[in-house]
Length: 303
Ligand code: CP
Image (tube, rainbow, N blue to C red):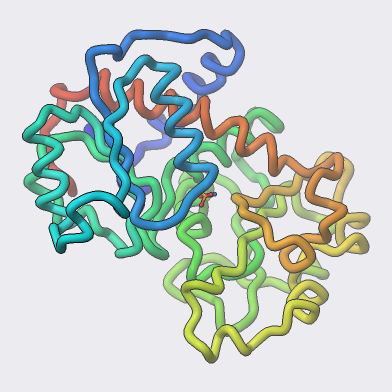
């Protein structure tokens, strides 16, 4: 694996290797300097708190040297393209690029960049490291994915997390279901749409998605009032009370409290929302380690 761009590019064996490595880092709690001769640049063209911060901590735990790059003060502001920016960083010796970009599959224009790329989110496309940290969190709970009933609720069409988790969970043998307003369905994904109230007492994992206001056109924005969304599709206290004893609640965050989930439930006993964030740092260490270790063993092609 030379890049991590989308979940379909990973085999289930690679997914399991990354989860095991992340768990190893978490259990050992060690600081390592194994990559102290490597340079990394984090290119975030969309806002981020969790992904950017956890990559920063992971990079420092592994000893990587960080290039100070902010889109707001870079030559992006003078019109330099993403390709030329990445080629510039390659030319000056950067060994790893972490990129979040508003354009779906932005990496297609980076085929001639000879530096490993980790996709930290592409538009409404994919968010592979979020999916991997979600899988790690599920694995910690159940030690398996086979036959798990997973309900992914909300803004499926605009969510890169939904797509990445759909592909990875299906590949790992989970039963994936969606619950969503009609306007936010993605009919390209082959999973059944269900009524949350008909399945809430049978599912093992309920995965809530942020309502992505920034990706909606005006029609979508006006389709749902906050209160009606919460009542019709959100995790209310009444729905939480129907969950099985072993069931867990996940959300990639940031959370719209009172919309996708009752504010009082964000830190409830079944919630793994902050565990997901904790796991994100270890998982990103594992991905960086895996990519830098395997660099050179395969071609550089983005495919
Ligand atoms: N879950 C997630 O990607 O959060 P950020 O946008 O804060 O990185």
